[in-house]
Amino acid sequence: MEERDTSETNGDGLKRTVFVTGATTGIGMMTARLFARHNYRLAVTGRIPKLDPLLRHPDLTSTEVLNVKLDLRSEGSIEDAFGTALDRFGTIDVLINNAGITLHKPIIDVTWSEWDDVLNTNLKGAYFLSAHFARENISRNRNGVIVNIASTHGLTGLAGRSVYGASKGGMIQMTRMMAMEWAAHKIRVNAIAPATVLTPSRQELLSDPDKREIMRQRIPLQDFITEEEVAAAAHYLASDAARSITGHTLPLDGGLLSQ
Image (cartoon, rainbow, N blue to C red; front, side, top):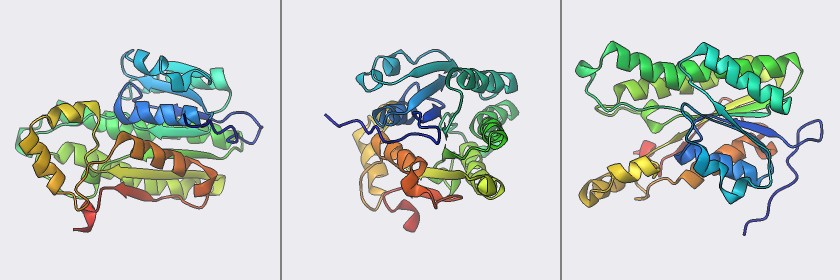
């Protein structure tokens, strides 16, 4: 069994606290578990209460966990969720903007409401949640780290992914802007851009062996990205080992973008 790292504390000598959005499954759940193994206190969120599998996981038994309902499309929900986490923990040291929805549809068939739903969740919500995080830490003269979970779809083109790609491309540029604006306050902001990640939902989509092989062959290293790899990258970017890294987008793509 992996030993827990008890060295990661904030400037007050307390356990660091991480706020992870979209922790009900996939990357968000794995990220929360990894941070828990490194002795972080957790505020974990989902749009609807589906966090029981995470909250029952053995990785979380030795840390303090707060389950917060969050709808990133709602300004009031963002304010309430972040305020609840602050009331419980006092400070938030790391924000992981992971929650998001996708849309696979030709551009000419996309509706106004679909565009709004994806952009409000993936980009607008992450933007204003990050602003809450920065405002609070700046007011207390505290440093902090934001890690945005973007996608290679924000860096390259692909048919049928226009709305999702626009949201993730916006997130990547948002990362640069926030990093520059908050650097003087020692708030670092970075992004991770994974290619196809084998999340539970993606596993179902790739249940067809032929389709799975076609997608695998697109990747130069000929292997998909795992949830564990994304979580490990997020933990690295949040750690003191990455103290000089800000405004960067780290592709986890098996060489996809180098073609």
